[in-house]
Amino acid sequence: MNKVLGALFILLVLQASAHATDKIRIGFPDLAAPFLSFPLAQKKGFFHEEGLQAEFVRINPTVALAALVKGELDYYTVIPPLVGAAIQRSSGEGRCLLRT
Image (cartoon, rainbow, N blue to C red; front, side):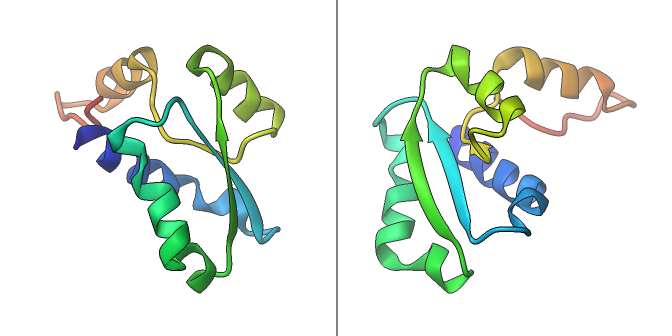
């Protein structure tokens, strides 16, 4: 459940990178239950309703961040533990912004 919420958070926060194009590439690590909501959403037409053509790419987590930086992926559905820890540490006043 936390992974799904985290993925939705990423999609909302990084939405600005999709403003110039209608086609987006979303990376996911495996075909496990937490990631099945994305292909289901595409099948139900939710991406199309928002004017997006989503392409889903199964990608190794160790390569995913590099692909994001290079622009080969627009979004990745999992936040690595180190990034989550950095966000928690920098949130100030002990507030937790995101759980991984």
